[in-house]
Structures are given as structure tokens and as C-alpha cells.
Length: 169
Length: 169
Length: 169
Image 1 (cartoon, rainbow over the protein chains, first blue to last red):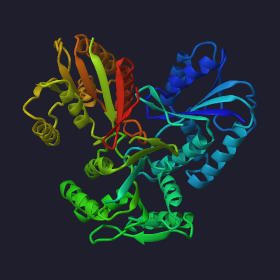
Image 2 (image 1 turned 45 degrees about the vertical axis):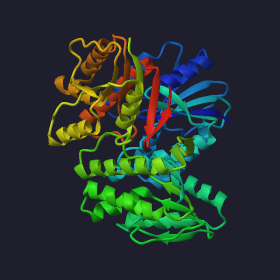
Image 3 (image 1 turned 60 degrees about the vertical axis):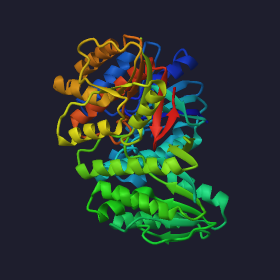
């Protein structure tokens, strides 16, 4: 089973940068697992900016869902991020939160089956005013439940605050 | 006076589950104090799901406001949650934040007068973008002020992050 | 260079009060640096309420931007707050986030050049659901990046949770 470090926090709290720093301390050739679907120009620009920020030593894999089996044995992997992956699942299931949660747990168990070091980036979405939009509210529910699920299995949980890591577990 | 543990955190961060676990460690027959008003079908479904999640050992009391005196001496009580209770007060006062704050403090003092163990669940609503909607913004103010008020009197304050308790006080 | 304590947290989490308490412990005549532009009646009322809350020992300076040089050598200064200052920069640059970020860093370096104790209040805006409004989303980006920038230079970073300070750095 994968050894998991969960890095969570708000928008622009330095999660990705910290995850990459951790990975580089643990491997000369880490894997960057990008879960973003290219929805629009803004997303595509973000993906390209992130790619440019990483050095040549990184191997990038783009994976929107974990439908098949990928063996990461022995690797150091940054998954960036849980939110974008859940977004794909939620969209593919026409915003059904129960089915999405079930599929997310199944995919996560497949994904973390092999023995590797996984540094996973997620988001805190639930500390603002509850959104009026029903899908947004349900997505925040889904995100919260999946964060709990991942954190319960993680060896380490870190909350980023203004770029500073705060150890939670 | 009640001995208070405040458990705060975001939406779906595991606050209620942790509060119930704490209560069960401290009592064979804890009291669950539900403050939700049954506004709509979504709320009613949540209330029913929460009831089903708790075991038979729990005694449930539904109380939307603390207008009268209830003596909880010697009990272990989970109040779930501050936000729903404040919601009732805010609504009953036509969204007047000053009057709501004053009434909340008065009711809280009545509620915590007797000698019992109180585990109280609240919400972080203020760490997102300030909402454009005036009532939402004022409710977040009210929530923040009441959280400070309760935390200042609490023996323990815990922030839930992805289901993991982080001791703040 | 200024010795910086960053106090961040959500809306109504007790940041300003804690900053002022810290300043009063460190100086008999602290400086209150107010960055709010008087946008509307609600803002003006907040500014006046804050002024009334502070005692006579405080010297208040209103400064919307750090265009010129101000020498605070030897003083204890509370800057309240980063968000309102960034708001001014963002507005003055027609919501251009890149230019705003650049100007914010330049102004910050001018501001913190002299040798004084700076207690700076900021906001967590990024832990809620990502806003649909583009300007709001970009402002939250700007706020997050500037919080990281300030925190990286700070000696101390504190997250306020329900009025309780949690040391992050």
C-alpha cells in the first residue's frame, strides 16, 4: 500500500510548491500526476504554467480518472490534485454526490494499492459561507468526505497556511 | 457552570462524528441536543440521517432556542450545532445582527449555567471570499463573534481538518 | 528591516483585537496604520467603530498605498489590514492581478525597509468554495500569493481560530 502524505489548504496557500519540494527531497526523478481535465483556456494556462515551473527531472503523467491499474511501485508521486480528480468524477456522474463518493473511494483504493510514496494535494473548500448553488454545496460535501477518507489512511496530514506547513497528523 | 469543549471546522470536516465519539467516551448515555429547525426537505433528510447514525444509547432533545431553562446537571451533552441555533435567532430577528448577537449571548449563559459536560459543534464560515449577499456576510459576522465568545469560555477548542482534530486551546 | 508578525484568519476571528493586544504589550504608544479606503457607508462605519475601540494611546495613520517612504524606525506598528491595501492596489490597476502582485511586493519592500516592529493583519480568503465571479477569484489568488510572500519574510505567523491564536511559524 502507498505511504500517503496529504497536503491540504486554501487557494494559493503554497500546497503544490510544498508537495513538489517534499517529492524532490525524496527522489531524483519524481512523478507528477496531473488530474486536470482541460475544461477551458484558463485551466489550460494553469496546467502549462505548472509544467513550466517544474524542472526537467519530473516525469509528468496526465490521468483524469483511475479507471485502470497503474503500478507506481517504488516511485515518489505527487498527485495534484484531489479536487480536480473529484471534479471529473462529479461531472461524469451528472453531479450525483453519492455515486461520485462511491467511485472516488473505489478509484482511490486501486490507485494506492501498490507500494510507493504518495504526496497528495487537496483543497479546503468548506470554511467559507455555504454556497447557495446546490451543485457547489454538494461538491464541497464530496470534497470534505473524500478529504476525511484520505486523511484517515494517511501517515501525515499537513495544512498549509500562507505557505507555511502546519502538521495536523 | 458547564465545562465546554468547542469543536469547530469546515463543512464535512468530521466535527459531529468527533463530538459524538468524545461524548461516548465520557458517558454511557449522552444527550444529543439538535438545534435544527426543519426548514425544508434537505434539512429534514440530514436530521434523519444524523439520527440513524447515532446508536440507541443516545437521548435526543430538539431545541431551536434556549428560551427557557433546561437543567443538564451531570449530563454529557453534544450541541449540534451553534450555526443552526444562530440561524434560528437571526431569522427570528429579521436578520438584525446586533439583536441576534445580544440574544445569543443571553441564551448561551442560560444554557451553560448548570454543571455538565458540553461538547459543542460550530462552523468556520469566514475563511472564504466575503459573500456579496448582505445577509450572508452579516451572518458570518455573527457566527464569528459567537465562536469567539464561546471559545473564550471554553476549556478546550479543537479545529477539525479533514477529520483530524487539531488542538487550538 | 522590520520584524514582522503576521496574523491571519477568517472574518471575525479576532485578528485585529489580538494584533492590538500584542502591540500594547510592546509599546506605550503604538501606531495604528489603517489601509481602508472609504468606499461606502458600511466601510466608514467599520473604520469609526475600530477607532472608537482603540484607546487614546494609539496614533492613527491612514495610508491606502505605500507610494512614498514612511520611516517607522523604533515604532510598534499594527497594519490593519493587508486585504484592504491589496483591494486598493487591485482597484487602481483595473483588477489586473499580475501588475497588482508586482506593485504589492514593491510597496511591501519599501514599507518594511526601516527597523521597527510590525504586526500585520491579513485574511484567509481561500478556504471556501472557489467563487464564480472572476474578479473575486483573482483577488483571492492575489491575497494568497501576498500572504505567502509576507509569511516567508515573517518571524512569526499566527492563525486565529475563534479568537484563539494558533502558532504556525
